[in-house]
Image (cartoon, rainbow, N blue to C red; front, side):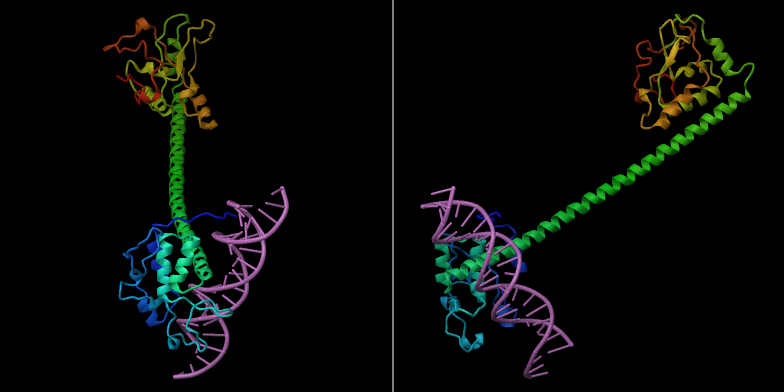
Length: 329
DNA sequence: GAGAGCGTCCATTTTACTTCA
DNA sequence: TTTGAAGTAAAATGGACGCTC
């Protein structure tokens, strides 16, 4: 339990007051409930100016005296609101209003202030203390309700954002799957094409013939490109009559200078491929089983417009490569 | 350190008052 | 119009706990 904690005067007190009314619902008493937000106060002890609480000089202290016997309807009314054992009386509108003003200034009650308020209102100090205590409880309840509403609104907003992100994630996954399917279809079509063309003048034969026997020869470096780029590039290559078509068969392979390599090259670094799941790796492996690339001796390559490739082959970031695997410049 | 006194907080009860059938 | 039950809000109570002396 936390004792002695102080509730600071909330800036929302007016809002609180708007929802709270004095314990009176009769028309006569309701007409007396006129919240005054511009009342002036005096004194270093933050006490509400008695005259100003209920509308100025016209309001005298009689309003804080016991209400009329007939209005009260109490036969044993003694003309005082001082505590009477066994009798519980509701505070008058003006008393409540006066207390509200003081509560707005300071929701804690110092002993001196309590006595002074009690004297002003013709109440027992104990009654004033109890009123402040109950008022703090009501204020706390209101604050809890407000906090709950605020938290609820935040939660709803976060949940909406979360659901939106989940939906976007699902859409992206679907897009990835569709792209994978498309890639597989292209690979299947390629294999079928190769099986039909197996024989003389097949690209495979050309490629194999183009592989030099001397692995120590200098080969044209290769580029690594995106999976889909490689696929599309291959399609273009095999469908093309371009004299440079064979250059692109090395897209997925890197040159190696190791003399003991049986083929003179090794599979390209797969780090640039999607590594999210095993499917991607299997796709990559399947791509590696495509027709061997064509390696040309450097001196055999003729460039109409030689690119500055010597330092970029194999180093070009995947993202920066041309989508079709051709020279990016 | 123990304890009395006083305060607040909290849960609960009591009471006043309103609404409605 | 009167009346009593039900509901509500506020006043008050009692216990637990913290702080000071």
